Image (cartoon, rainbow, N blue to C red; front, side, top):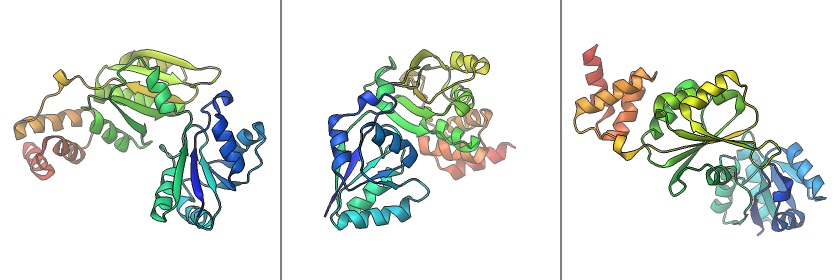
Length: 276
């Protein structure tokens, strides 16, 4: 029985590659890579000759089974992602679960992480935080996601691509209010930049400036003094109306407030219909 090694790789600066990561990638029998073209550049830089196996979200279930078969037969494998720690907002998560289901040992070779790096230099509270990954490209799902975490008092961390940044900032402003935000761009790369501002100022800035590079967005959590619990169904219904004013459908708003207050979605929706 072999071992699966979860290996962290640099998020931009090749100097952040660890000795142990290089050693591990050299000694395993094969490496599972999200994009073999990206990983080939890394391996070539460190003169690592280990064969690559393409493993990504579109073939994870099928290829994952064959990878587990090889490890179970005695081969050692490593999994890497394009940048940073695999298995975090990444299809490697499924491979790790498949290995555990088959009794295969999994070991971690830690490396850089955009989540932790962005949080560490954000200047915001790092004691309690929630990593929320990428928001959906679908407006409805994106807004439902933001509504679901709007009352969290923990610092929120998101990944975002430049072409979606403007819409994301506008929606965050609507659902979170004008909170502090640190926009961490191109971390560890030549043009690394951290912009500490507010959501309103960030949304205004990127209406005129085209964003470039990958972003880690770190946003302060809700202020506990601003959170109002719904003690009656009428108070819960008012929260439903607030979400609807921000663009959410009535049924979705009722579902969201039901989770937060304990009132059932059905009774909220019935009361909402009675008002029409």
